[in-house]
Length: 434
Ligand code: SF4
Ligand code: SF4
Image (cartoon, rainbow, N blue to C red; front, side, top):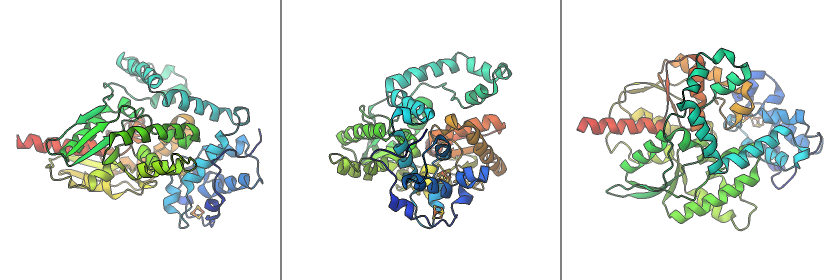
């Protein structure tokens, strides 16, 4: 297969020219750490993208496999002294690959585009798929497959199954006005997302409960759709743009002070709607304005007097896994720590590299299983060394991955969103007050 990049989303030469080849990004890159290979490092990948752009290399399957192995965790961006916007370069490189005709791009990329367009972007189809997964859990089959039948499964299938969620709760599918406090200080909208409310309804419940205690009326516009983060990361910019336009219209109509997102990958993507729609004359300005009103829930809560409703004890040792798209893409590191640090009885035990990716990275755990498991194994070793029995996260993808890591490693630990721990603290205070 041959061919270069195509379409409207070509990586910008000016961005690539910022790289001074210093290599500061290498020691923080999980795929470079795992392989020791220059071509699996940020600098190596930038070199490949530049070579294709300059017409000096063909975008062969082999070359693209190096781009594909990137987690898009953006740790390299945080480490770069030259402000190379690695995340957007890689998103554009993937979009420029996806934009090639279906016959001229790797089969894996086409399959991924089909899954993103015809499952994730279509709530009814997605819910049908997840209904089957829920049946799989509730029928007891999942327990059997993970227990007595585990050895009967071929290794690749066993690895895939170990990644599957345990869908044992009723999904969160509420919309409209979710909660209205007695004394209202702000009106906010919640992104309920595509899989989030299906997999982890308790995170949405906790978010609504916390925001209400802080005086927010919380609404969920019924016309909202998936934020498009996974599509952007996989290079399906066309679908990501269609989803962004629908979300902008839906949230604008809600007339709120802020759009609150409790999944770091989604808040990062929605903050970048302006860039995503930059070439669309009708939407560019609207997208910029919309993006300026998006807040990750931890960023929003930490900026309030969140201790005012009263904080009760949540005893235990917790370690925080920084979500890559919170720490590196949004540069938010202190908010989750401020919240955890304020909860009485909760001791924060920092792991060695809390902002190193856990290997979840959207669909990465499914399409790059081996590397994802390698990265996860290092993460679990760091977590075990802290002695914590609680792992706090800020993103459902990380939660899913870390739960799989806990099962694999046999660690005695639970995984919770920071907002769930704050909600638990509020409830403990309320119970103590009687
Ligand atoms: S985004 Fe993450 S995996 Fe990709 S090159 Fe940068 S540090 Fe490495
Ligand atoms: S740290 Fe930045 S400038 Fe240095 S090699 Fe990496 S991307 Fe290039």
